[in-house]
Image 1 (tube, rainbow, N blue to C red):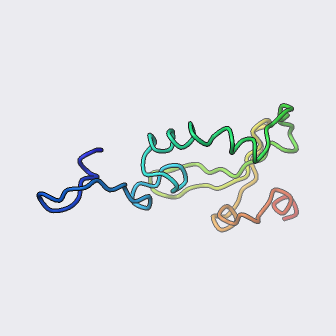
Image 2 (image 1 turned 45 degrees about the vertical axis):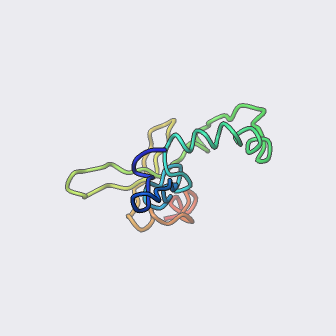
Length: 111
């Protein structure tokens, strides 16, 4: 019951939850980090059981170590690329390719 949740005219005050869109924690699903933690404490085990637990360690190899990344620059002249987290190899990308969720390392290697 924080003051930013208090609403209504004098004598008829009530508390109202925050709007998620304004605060957008947890990928726009929670109003605060505390709210996110409360939800996880209540539902986290059920969610992991539903999705599936990882029973074997995930092994990172040079073949599956690729991520899309970019170098941030103050002048917004970013350089976009695929980066291999094991070998530090880079494959340059255009910003459009970097933003395209369907543009994969396999496609980048073909060009």
